[in-house]
Length: 263
Image 1 (cartoon, helix red, strand yellow):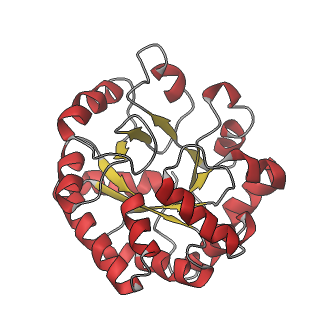
Image 2 (cartoon, helix red, strand yellow):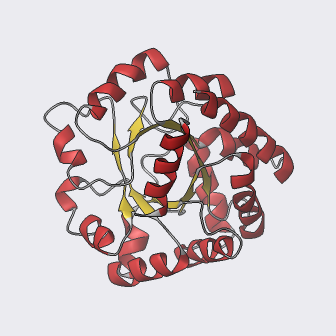
């Protein structure tokens, strides 16, 4: 069992939903980013998604794109993002960490080297948004063999024919994208999400976590109530972009996690 599997088993035994938060590694700079990251578990975060900045983030909206640009301009790299994980693990050996990003930086590093480095650093799972199931042999299957969960995204356009393919080698959890479009584009609606989550859960035993379009404790609670938990990314990144003190950012995360845990 990975840390992700253990976390969901624990939450299930407690009758609680999961709160997942996303931050971009190295935004606005490495030390501030690491300080936020280290504060997330204390703010109620169950799983951390750590973004790896990339020059062409096609699935991301302006908020995450700009975060990636800030990080890259500050010198953030895949190696430095893995180092963030190592430094986080010095104090926390239980909170799961999922690296989220694109295949190019991993390919450039070399898949075998990357997987070895990621596992050693303390990474638990990967979300690589530009590798479809047809390319599972590239990274998904080697990642699973290395003991890392490979988490896939399902969307409102993932129809009954496509869903089994998406689920086939997925592990850890399924990330359901609540809206059609890019990150940070619109508000998620629980009434729209509920039947889609039910459809996915009928096809898999994996937890279904819903992301995109969640920015208030109320929405986090509503979405978590119809799923196994929720993810907030752009809204947290906006606070970081506004140069709010780390304590303020974490207070906002705490309000969101409290909402999700009521779900």
